[in-house]
Length: 144
Image (cartoon, rainbow, N blue to C red):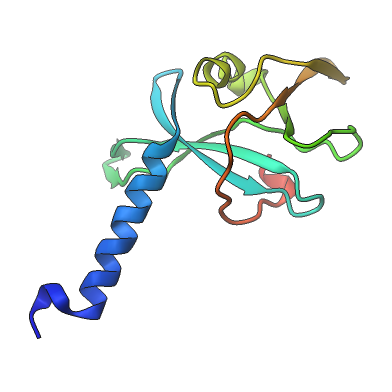
């Protein structure tokens, strides 16, 4: 049996292809990073979370990171008390996430805000998700 027909070789190549394909499906420029869009579900209420990860290889503190391996930002926030209908998500566009709303709207990932929800000293934007997400692992609430 040749190396290229070995089942492990075929499986590894398939996984690499699938990973690269999924990474490049949705991309966005946020601040100084080219990011791939990843989707997860919040554990407590099954709502959609949007996670931005590096779309290109990165060197950080002397370590080479492959595409999709470094979290850049979590674009959503989980507010279980806020009523949402299908495809609605809550965007965190303050603090370290300032500018993420514009980046996701410009990339046609989300709609412009439909309404806002005031929480403490900030307002969260409620938008429609415009793409069909392929979900990864669930997210714990403390990862927001």
